[in-house]
Amino acid sequence: MREEAAKNMFRLTSGAELVRPFLESWTVLREGFIHSEERTREVVAISKSDFAGNADAKIMDLLKDRIRAPDDMLQQFQRLHGRLAADIRQRGDKRIPDADDTSRAFIKDVIRIGAEIVRSDNPGLRILQAWGFDLSDIGPDTTLADLGDMAVFRRKLEVLNVRLNLPWPELIARVREDRLPSGIIYNAIRCFHPDTHEWDGSELADRYLACLAAYGDVTYVDKRTYEAFRLARQKSETFAALARHVEKAGGYDAIPGQLAARFAQAAATP
Image (spheres, rainbow, N blue to C red):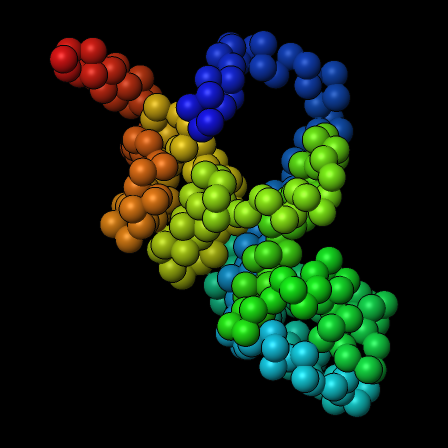
């Protein structure tokens, strides 16, 4: 199935033909691209920060908790804001203009969403249900980090299903991220990506583009993603079987020569 998908995934065209449909709306698109890039920097910084310190907490244990007193919650959110802002300031993409504003806006969203869904009887269960899960989706060892990954994948399925329009219960029951080439590659690159001092916003786009390695003959990546591929191949036989050839180059002008040499060698091999 993957081989069949690869046949129809890529379309070769000139740069002029590629950008022509976008030229009439370029001013609007440019603003959208800038906003998306800014948001991506914040997403990477927030997702890589361990400001909450509870990623390994078991969901089953959290379900036993009761809602905190209002003053206690306020103090806790203030502490979380301080930790997140410090992480963004110290390690976030340097192009993020204000770490405090980014952290404050995120915590404010968390408080707003929580206020809409949390009830005093069982706050953990209410959050679980708001994310579209029930107790049957949770095992005894499922952690908060696991649930976050599940929620992100569930959201991707929702977006995809806008076009597919498949029966939702059947879709979420049958489609698992660890059975999709893109899911395996994306999560492996995230796991094995070098822990650089600065959390560059481009890392998120690098993960998405890395998924093409399951389909393209050669995929060019930056040196950090290249290292993640190397480690993932060593650690996972499944990943090694899925990912095709990955290469890096010192500059774009070096790529044509590398590709010519590679395909010439392949053609000469019996």
